[in-house]
Every structure is written in C-alpha cells, then in structure tokens.
Image 1 (spheres, rainbow, N blue to C red):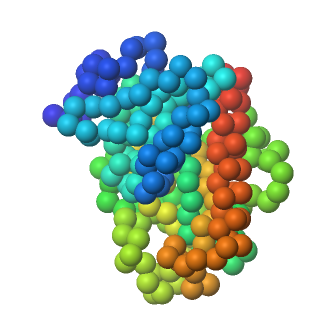
Image 2 (tube, rainbow, N blue to C red):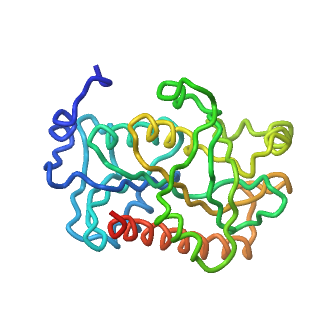
Image 3 (cartoon, rainbow, N blue to C red):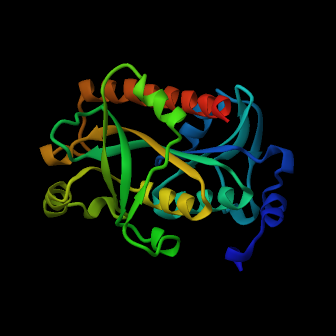
Length: 253
C-alpha cells in the first residue's frame, strides 16, 4: 500500500521530474497554509507547484533558492509533517528543516526569541510508526549548518522540545509537567518530522521563534501589540535564517 510506494511512484503521482528532486525540504508549521505558501514562494525561482490526486498534498512547491533545489510545504501537526517528510525521504532529499513557532517553557525564553531544539520528545501519535527505539529523537545538523546559527546576531536558545498533538488539551498541569521534565518548549510537528527524517537517514534541523510562554499564563488567543510586533520581526528573522541554512548546505557539499 502507501508504505510500499517507490521513488518512481511518487515522482509520477506528484508529477515531479527526476531532475527537480529537491536536496532540501522546508516545512513551516502553521494554520495559515496559503499565506505562508505565498510568502515563501516569493523568494524562489523556477517554481513548480506540486499537487496530488484527491488533494492529499497542497500548499507544496519545488523551486530554486540561489540554485539549490528546495521544496516548501505548509503543514499543521504531526500527521501532515510526517507525510511530507516521508515522501521526500523516499525521493532521496538530504535535509529537512522544520520552522515556525513554539510555546516557550523555559524561564529565560521570551516572546519572539529564537529557539533551536537539540532533540524532541515524541508526545504525538505519528512518530511511533517510524521510531521504535525510544521517545527521544535528535536533530542532526551538519557542522557547517550549525555555524550559520552560531554566527547569527542575537541570542539563540537551545534545548529539548516536547511535541504534542492536542493544542487545546494543554493545561496548567501538562505545562508544569513538561517544564519539570526539562523541556524548554512545546510544538506540534518537530518530533514527527525528526522521527521520519531519522528513519530515512535525512539530516534534520529546526529553527523556531517563541510565540508565547504558557507558564506565564500567555496563550495564542491573547492580544498584545508589543508582542505581535516582536513575533513579526522574529518570523522574518527565522525565515532569513532558514534561507541562509539552505544556501550554506549547497556550499558545504
């Protein structure tokens, strides 16, 4: 069935020529699929919009970023992230970059701060089908790619992230428990993306910004003009970092 679909099968299903298989795939975790699809698309040339029968995939394209064949997809939650990563893992894509925002749990992470997980806890439901040897899956950045982050102006926080599948089920008990267990942030995609990437032998890296800090009784439904401005600046900064990493990946090979 779907697990048995081959590289040639997926090229045919998605109508992607073999010479357009991307070296990198960027996943942007978001509910606003079309908005981010169009925002990222503006930065690419020779764009091939990718769809699939029955609308299984949408808001997905392959294009060139400074000559690097790169795919982009808007995703929400572990199932979507795992599906896109799976397809490009079968196709032989070498690097997956997960980006977007997260909820901060660490005391020193504020709204708009950049966060880069070193590993993720599989608290969602998709990763178990790809990773059977534990609940922790690590990032695997090439040293050249990590250097992009090290040279970035401003502070970048590193730590562990907890991936959940039920945003509205996060209560004070869960938030306190995750913090007590040492997790610096929480999101809905990272562990699944990392688990599938590990399964296919892909390099994997995550660059996020903190949308809020739930331990301070902040959440996505609250409005704050200053924090909104900080999020907008950080969103742009994260996107630029991702593009720099893609470009450095080409030169490091």
